[in-house]
Image (cartoon, rainbow, N blue to C red):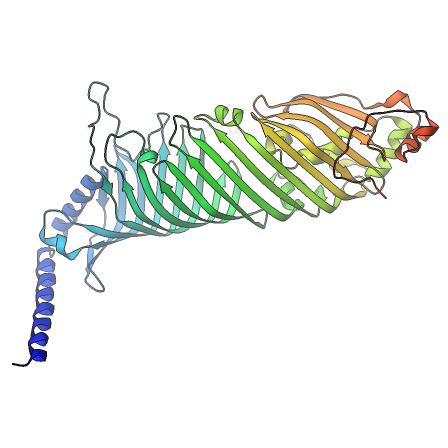
Length: 480
């Protein structure tokens, strides 16, 4: 017999053997109820959770052995932590003849996954911590899980440990190489490694919504990085990254995010306010923090935040005309103008305590804001104004002071109308809590009359004999 027919016979014999193997496997699996019970038992043991399948399994052998399960539920101590309309499980053929099924891949359709982290820092899918008298084994075995993909899924995360959480909807993603190192058990996040890609149509948190969220995640023994991270916020694409370090006694976090040319109108609409301003602005933030509670995270927050814009429109009041009225009446409130700054990067905590409604009840005019800069340095949870000012056609307004997010208070915040040299013409202070601020009456220097104020705005100090130390020396130029 020639070599070619011999190899052909060997190949044919191999194919026949595989066919017989598959046929034998299918024969063993004809009783789907028995097989479903076996699958539930094996999967529950492997996961340390209770798996139940409401529907009858269906088996496909091409392109590989796949088992389709309908109406799948995963529980721990009676509490459901995950469900899926359908789960397709790819099983290694060779494992059918052994005592354990080897799952190579799991594909979930319309899953609903709820992940909770308790006050003790443990996730609800982790085994419960043993009593002190029964410590965990010193050498727990390493664990490896199959790759997982999901389609049209929802993810709910509740973190009682940090007092945070979020809900993600319409998510598609892949999870690869999920492994947990062997040895003494300490913290799941310190021991796990994986890579993942996830895209969600929406992520909701604290009444705010991020759209079109996409990121690549990489976890290696306690360090989790989401990079690159892209979102759509206020109708605008944003880019950033998140790095979480769980290797120390206290977790630490780094956040970087930029949002370029977002519409100001969208910002006010998220606060359920009528349109107060129009135009586009740039936002950027680079922050770090560490802690185990929300209070600790606020206390440790540090970094920089910036909001900048040009060619903006302020609705509801002609600010330049209001300044002129102040020169005559001394009754205008600069804090009403300065509130524009509070609506920026320093967060919604400040704006919750301020009555924005009265800003839109001015003289019905509009103001052109040629430039607005709002740069802040954050240290120990306190935002310090570095360069905070804006310019209208005829005036400049600037701000000094701090916003204390730890105690939620204004700290020595002063808003001032300034002249061409940056000297304060009129000052007004705001202090107290964010929710109930105390706003002092505006004070004009030396109780100057209207004509003298107009001269000072033009920088003609010689006519009044006035000397001053500049209140503002930042990037916002005086009106031309």
